Every structure is written in C-alpha cells, then in structure tokens.
Length: 178
Ligand SMILES: CC(C)(COP(=O)(O)OP(=O)(O)OC[C@H]1O[C@@H](n2cnc3c(N)ncnc32)[C@H](O)[C@@H]1OP(=O)(O)O)[C@@H](O)C(=O)NCCC(=O)NCCS
Image 1 (cartoon, rainbow, N blue to C red):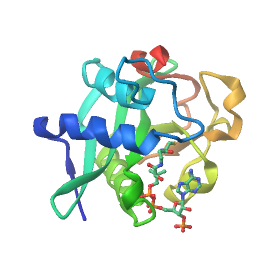
Image 2 (cartoon, helix red, strand yellow):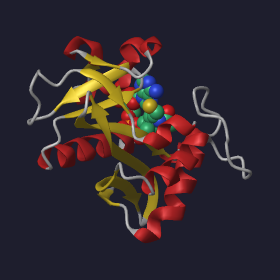
Image 3 (cartoon, helix red, strand yellow):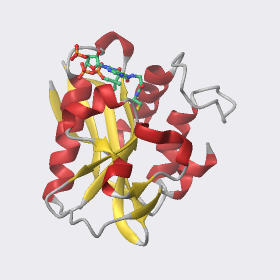
Image 4 (cartoon, protein in one colour):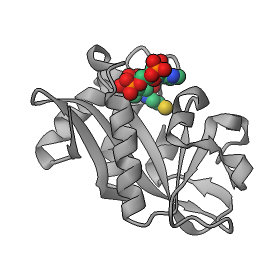
C-alpha cells in the first residue's frame, strides 16, 4: 500500500471513496446534494475550496494502483490560534480492516508534525483513535464546538504544542454546513 498526497486527478475518486465509506454508516451526515451521497463526500469538496484547506495534508491510500482511502486535515482555530481538524477519514468497505485507515492517520499526523502544526483534533471513537495518541481533548483544556461530544472529541498534541493552547476549537467553515 502506498500513502501519497492527493493529486488533481484524484478529486473525483476521493469523492467516490468518501461516499462509499460513509454509505450506511449510522453516524454519517445526511445527504445534502441531489445525487444523494453522504454529507461527508460533499464536505470534502467544500473544504477543498475553503481557505482552511491544507494541500499537504490531503492524503490517499493506494493499493495496486487504486485509491482505496483518503484522509484530510484542515485548518481550524483554537481560541484564535491555528490548529488542525482531522476528517473525514475514509476507507472503501472492501479494504477496511487491512490497515489503510491506520496508515493514513499515521502519515497525516507525521506530515502535520513536520509542518510544525501544534495540535490535531477530531470527533471519533476513542477506542479507535487512542492508538494514534489521541486523548480526550477536554483533558488538555481544548473544548469541542459542541459540548455534548464529550470524550469523542479528542486531541493529539504534536511537537510544536504547548499547554497554553486552550479554548474552544472552531472547525473550518464548511463543517458547519452539514
Ligand atoms: C474508520 C475507518 C477509516 C478505519 O479504516 P480501516 O482501514 O478499516 O482501519 P484499520 O484497518 O487501519 O484498523 C482496523 C482496526 O480499527 C478498528 N476500527 C475501525 N473502525 C472503528 C471504529 N469506528 N471504532 C472502533 N474501532 C474501529 C477495527 O476494529 C480494527 O481494530 P484492530 O486493529 O484492533 O483489529 C474505516 O473503517 C471507515 O472508512 N469507516 C467508515 C467511515 C468512518 O467511520 N470514518 C471515521 C469517522 S470518525
């Protein structure tokens, strides 16, 4: 499996991969486009056109020349300071459970660290993301945009982190459209 940056040719495939990954998933966002794709597939497209898009942090997983997964981190704001929000993270159903999701998360965290981002947050299952060093964000003084997310709002400090980075996290604007 190869993890690499998204290229312009990947854009339609990334949409299809995101749609396939989130179709039928209980917590997926409702469709907002006429073609009925899950909201997460629309979100990736909106993010690509948003100032919060960080091209270095949109990665695909390729297996035998086929894109089977995608991850993106976008710029958000933590009490006015820049920080990253991770997601959507998608692996097509036929390739799930073979390590693509883990490879994508490790790769995007390594890239974010190398680029001197201080912190990555996400909304997800602690049972999955704990293995990548994510901890409940509130323990670091980082608050979710929605307090009801509880321990599912997690944060991963990177090398450039210091504990003055606290407050309410705001995602890139397109997240609010879902
Ligand atoms: C979540 C997802 C990206 C994981 O990708 P993947 O390639 O299947 O993951 P990996 O093969 O690297 O890891 C599989 C491991 O993660 C676990 N796992 C996968 N999804 C999980 C979840 N939602 N909660 C807890 N554990 C999960 C598996 O049980 C497995 O555990 P094990 O290593 O202890 O056996 C993929 O299942 C997916 O696209 N799901 C639908 C979309 C989605 O929910 N995205 C994440 C939103 S936060």
